[in-house]
Image (cartoon, rainbow, N blue to C red):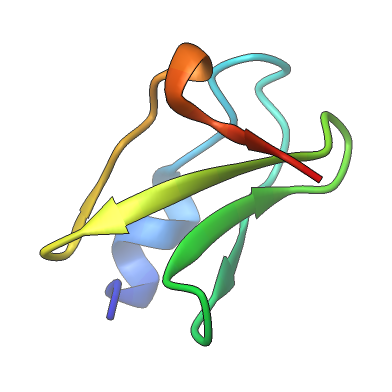
Length: 54
């Protein structure tokens, strides 16, 4: 679970847009880029190459 303060400062590395935390999938979602970034052991993996498209 990501802390709200951490989530407030994170931005999508591709478009610099806002991210939404999906608690069910444990992923950060960018609706502008249609990408999901994994969160592993409370650490966001913010690599565009490893993001999942949706």
